[in-house]
Image (cartoon, rainbow, N blue to C red; front, top):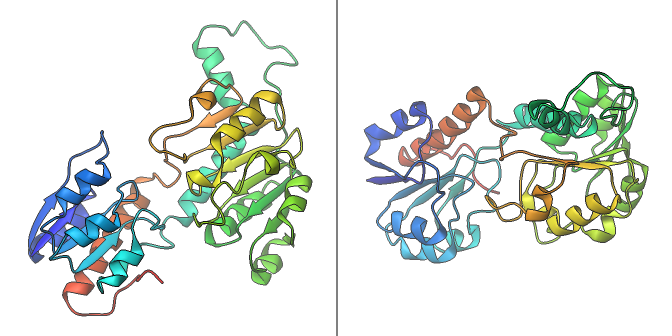
Length: 318
């Protein structure tokens, strides 16, 4: 039994797998293995344990002739060609729910940092430019009592909304389906039209999966629906936002600011964004607490163990 883990993960997870066969672990970052490198890595694998940043293409899956099962430690699985796996009868598992609260912490931290211009202010101080308090230095946007528009009221969106209640924010949300439980719990208001939500919100936080219909959901036209004082936060998937359009909107004052943890072409970031001060940029760390990342890693290993023991999978991809 050959189990290929595409990059190093928590030892607690590897300890579950080592008694089950030969465990081969890919190289530590950086650089992140490319699609071709992953394909070569898994060519003789029985089981693949992949990470969200590692593309598992249809060609890679078809080329791994012994492959019997795929697990990812991510809550998303858009890096895996699930259709190619299903065509061969290969089950795919993921790790939903584990990172919800930690990611919500990260999203709200981005919201606060972007609203209050904390990145700009810290760079200013570290550069030795601070000469004393002035009344207009780095004035930003109030978060308390502002309107938060949540796009996607799933588990993470709902967790962000709970944090927003502590800041006495007005909570609006847009989703393909109404979440009446969230409305009751959080006094949230469903907004049927995305454009309407954008026009009414002081902050917009994105929590949608990457699907054909959500790719470039936030494009130039949609960004112009937002308030000029508004801030956009994305901790979902990078391609949900058109990065070039966002850079243009930030540079031209179409919106006031943004906070991003994910990118269209990770690990690359749109150079125009890197040149701007009014955007907070993080390296995909919204779920990066030691406890959460360990729990994610272990959950993927537990799915593999369940498969090898011929038990029901804990988290099959629907």
